[in-house]
Image 1: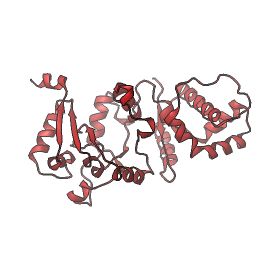
Image 2: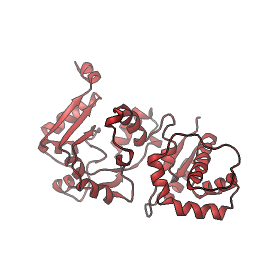
Image 3: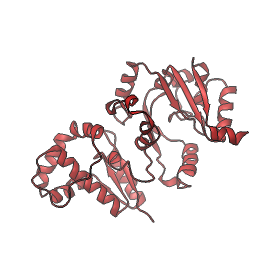
Image 4: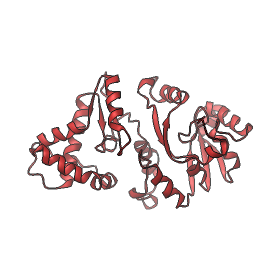
Length: 294
């Protein structure tokens, strides 16, 4: 069996470390976080305490900016010379992570591992999908700067909502899920009315069994056990703020979902139905699906 890696990005108070530990026990694989610092210190020849101290100082500011501007350059080989820069620390940790993933199936907590591994084959990553399906296809002079490509992160939900509230959103592009969800706004969410659901913000939530089954069957060839069970999603409020809303259809079963959404009243059990009252929304059917349905 080929090795696989699971990356968990975590913020303060999100419980990422505990989730990784439980998941590692369930799958029978190792979970790495602080151990990466130990291995990196051994590789660099630095004292481990000193290495950890530098890592903590840089974790907040440097790594975030490094993600946005890091070039695809290979890492230094062999034993490092004296550690002299934050860039060197990032490179050492990156090398350790890549070597771990080659050697065994494992879980990597933090350390920008989702970014470092995004170019691997069969990566389940929205970062990778966006690079492949959108950013790489836009003319360079029209491409949005990297610091304006924002992904919601657990622990920073309010920051995303605040940014969107203060910004004009021109266009929202989305698909539609097997149960009518858009983004990962899954139905139903108990304890709120339809009008409250329509105004709900960015949040973390459980992925429904229908979505796990459908996506796992189509994208993972039936390996439902490794499909994520939790997600973070923009809320309906952010999505519906867009001046123009386009829903892309590429699977035959999506015809039935959109038909149901059009014939029912707006309700949280069919989130895509809220587009009925959007002033400028439309369905876009791929050529392949159109030809298939003829």
